[in-house]
Amino acid sequence: MCERYALPDQVAAEREFVPAYAWWKFNKRFNVAAQQYVPVIRVHDSQTEAVMMRWGLIPSWAEGKLTAPPPLCVGVDELERSAEHRDAWLKGQRCILPIAGFYAWQMTRAKYRQPHFVRLSGRSVFGLAGIWDQSVDDSDDVIESCSIICLPANDLLREIGGADYPMPAILKRRDYEGWMRQAPLEAKAALQTYSSDRMEAYPVSPRVNSTVPDDAGLIRPTAG
Image 1: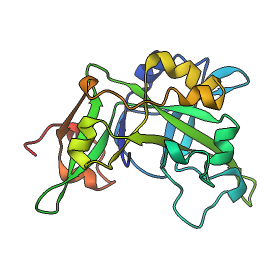
Image 2 (image 1 turned 135 degrees about the vertical axis):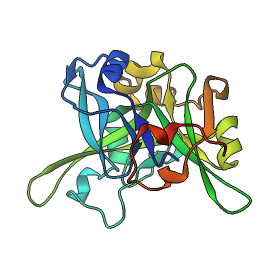
Image 3 (image 1 turned 60 degrees about the horizontal axis):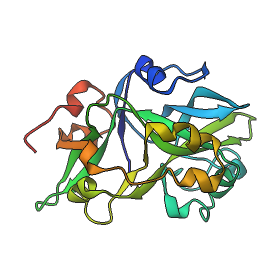
């Protein structure tokens, strides 16, 4: 799954996705974590818009809160049966999360979780498929939140995390519009495991195991 990721700068994200309306405001980051607000692209009134949402989906029926931590990710096979995601999926509330890369962890023989930074070769920004919802709490505050959709791992991610390690659903550029606008069945066809040949991964500092550091040194290669 995708537990942490890095953000591109706002200009690069807008150049990649060209939203009709850009309401978001964010800076380049290197350690995005659960429950933080993240940039998202979605369709509203037939136009694409760029907004900020909380990472960790809170469904509309939860009235702003859940008894368990809001899910950061959802497997593609769980979309239609997940209590948290089913309604949003059927309503077509799909989105794209712009990222620069994400972290994956490998369990070493010494039982140590070695982080790796994973990105697309030659790309400074790309999009992950997501699903979003809106919930209103007891104080009438509106919370918009999202989850990342996960797929079975490709060869690169299996080498890091093992055979059952899920990877985020990376969208091809040609599928951006269809993912957000098409009916659920057609949109689901865009959810294909991304080719390892177009990706790269390398070990990075264990500092990213904490949510506190947030600097460019986190994505610098180490000896592993």
